[in-house]
Amino acid sequence: MLAKRSPLKWHEFALLQSYFRFVAPGKGNEAVNVDQLFDSYALDIDFVVKKPVDGMRQVFTKVLVNWPEEGPAGYKLFVEAVGLFSIAGEEGMKEDVRKNLAYYSTVNMMLNRIRAHISLITATSTLGSYVLPAVDVTDLFKQKAQQKQVPPSAPKPGKK
Image (cartoon, rainbow, N blue to C red):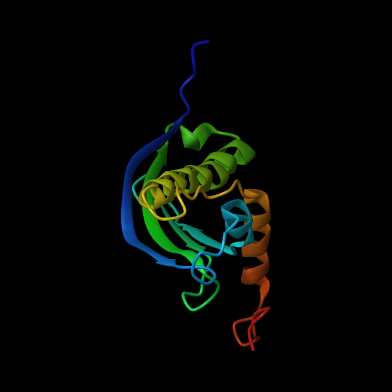
């Protein structure tokens, strides 16, 4: 099948920060179930999609895996990146199509690029390659919307 090109254009991707550390689990020769360890990692993902300036959107994405650094053993990962996107012909697009491209698609693309980066930097480490699991991006957007509804003076959920 011939693929139809999307009006969404990805112009640039830049890593802003990338941190990787391995903390040995268990004692000595104790066997480690790598799949269980990887499944236990907490994932913290945040993003910001900046309104277009001269037709270009900046999408900042931050991924923390098994964080804080003082937390459980295994891989500790912190990656922050920015992408630059535009949408050809967005002025005449239906609102829902434009929003889907501008928000969901760009964040998904950024997560996929960060996923590849994380897999690459962990590939030659002790436990082997860590692949950032698929995440529910719709739920991330719901959480983001809820954060914006909390008044600035009120404590955010989970913080004291």
